[in-house]
Structures are given as structure tokens and as C-alpha cells.
Amino acid sequence: QVQLVESGGGLVQAGGSLRLSCASSGMIFSIYGMGWHRQAPGKRRELVATITSGGSTNYADSVKGRFTISRDTATRDNTKNTVYLQMNRLKPEDTAVYYCNATIIGYDHWGKGTLVTVSS
Image (cartoon, rainbow, N blue to C red):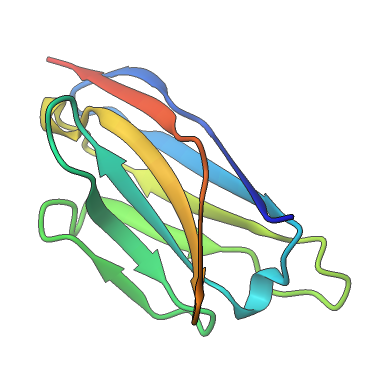
């Protein structure tokens, strides 16, 4: 059973930084595309950043130059299985629940989310 567990959220002042982590289990991490999405109060869930199994990245325009997605390098024993989101120069509009996503053709898995609150 695939599980994704996010951590690292919290309260931070505008201009500050946070690093989110998403630990996966029950899946072969290296073959999945991974991503971060977010949902602000009263808004639809939106894509923040993605990283393919090969390491190619993609970002929403709103976070380009401020956020960086990365992932553990694959290991034979599949013990390194975490994706990260480094968030710098945070803005109040970045306040949202951040969700981790793992995707491969025919399968889409989600974590329960971690709350990020940016105060002005």
C-alpha cells in the first residue's frame, strides 16, 4: 500500500523559508514522478512543482525562482524515498495546505497534506 507522509509545514513570517519533506513507502520510488500541489482556503488545488523520475523539474509561474523541488537519488534497496520542496522568500499568498503527489501511468497517490502559514 502506497503511503505519502508530508512534514515540515508551519508558521513563518513573510520573507522566510521552509523545507517540506514527503516520505514515501510501499512503492518503487525511483520510477514515480513526484510533485507538490497546494490548496489555499476557498481555492482550488493547484500545481506547485513536479520532478520526473529522471530529475526534470517544472514549476508554477508563481513560485519560479523561489521554490526548489528535489528528490532522493534512487538506491538499489529503495531506502531513500523522499521528495523535498525548499521554499524561500515566502509570501502570504503561499499560505495553503501542501500536498505531496506520486504519479505513474495509471496510478496517482496523494498524501494528507501539511499546512504552511505565512504571516505578513
